[in-house]
Image 1 (cartoon, rainbow over the protein chains, first blue to last red):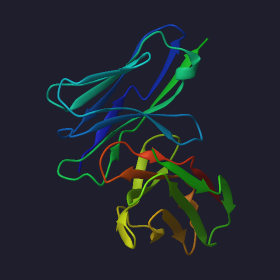
Image 2: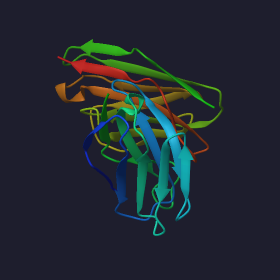
Image 3: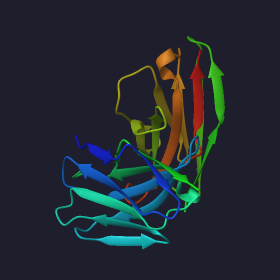
Length: 112
Length: 112
């Protein structure tokens, strides 16, 4: 089965600093999703990547999928307290579109 | 886009009592539906998914069961709760089994 490992597990940054979260897969990624979750709430969809080398941005968040489609990174520029939360990557396993595997999550704290 | 409703938001139940968590979907027809459990505010464990009425796939053998009596209704149940059933339960929907998932607000279950 496909496994997703995220790093770091937790991150504390000063407001205004840039940061990167990584998601590494044990198998080829056929669809990679990034979600954000605030404590005790549901997940909010951020971005989906499908093609090797693809890069997408939304406001100050940029996500990339590497050419080999086994790693994705999420980069936040000039972090703000509103960026705080848990970031999770999710992936479609090869050959099936019903199930989504999720990473272990990265807890981000932004200090004003 | 879909809207996922879950209730109750929080639940405290004694060991050995039954459980019924309900999830309903608005804004789409024939979605794939999912039940996840999240421990310690981190990664999601897929419990069940359904591609249609009466169709349930179980991912993890356990004390829980799921049912889909209507197209936009997904229910998570247990006959006798265990302490280990405590956690944050999330329902999600997905159009046609591809693309991003839409998540409900979650139910925090505490078994005492």
